[in-house]
Length: 90
Image (tube, rainbow, N blue to C red; front, side, top):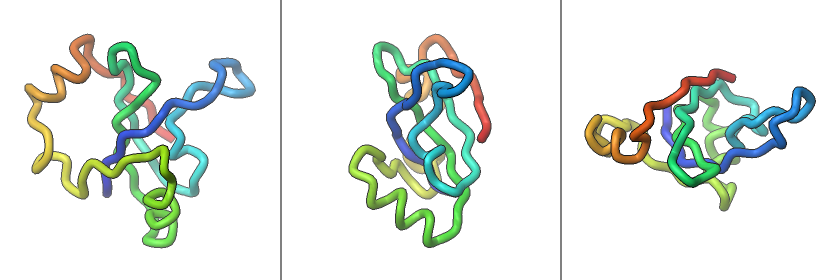
């Protein structure tokens, strides 16, 4: 599993819902939303090596870590998402 910072795409309609850009790739993901003032999400992604390579090549998506616990504490997460987070799975 890898963790990414990714833009939110979509228009919020039923036909084009808001979702992280990694949803464009063949992967399983879980996203924490509500980063204040941003259309950005922290996303946990499970994918094959080929799909990880495709995601890593996307200039709009930033790899945070292979293990988020080594990168961000719960206090740091609360600073990023002070209103909490909504988990969404794809």
